[in-house]
Length: 197
Image 1 (tube, rainbow, N blue to C red):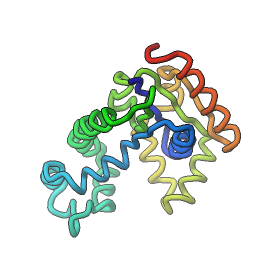
Image 2: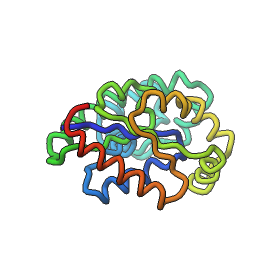
Image 3: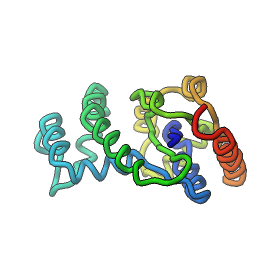
Image 4: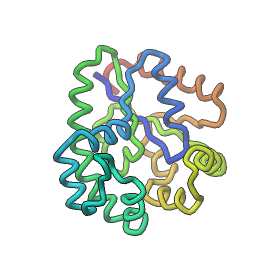
């Protein structure tokens, strides 16, 4: 089965693009959502995150996001350590999920696909881009956050230019109508090219 990686910087609109592929009948695996579920369900992950961040990492069985985010925000080495705990387990979960799919290809949506080397396991990679001002606008509206926090997240992500160099397709996500057209065209190309590049 062909694996198509879907990535893009924070606020670029990966979720919007993922929904368009879903509408075309393509199964979509959202790595961040699955990671969140595993952080709640997996005893091993819980134990390791408590070892990393301390007892305050979980409150009433749920990840203490503000506490963890604050540590990561002040020391990015913690983000690398956290990713090293979670990503191998998400990769394992994805493999199991993939075995249940029956389509010609699947989409694996990962925010830091290039940063964690995940692109090497994909047959194709789609990068979603959007102008920086639009990304800020979307995030400030969606996450009730600050520009400072958004910039800190962006700093831990590759630039669009670096991602584009290693991508097979690029979707410029500014209007929904235009994005739909781009998704439909990529879908057609992937089906036409078949299983392998």
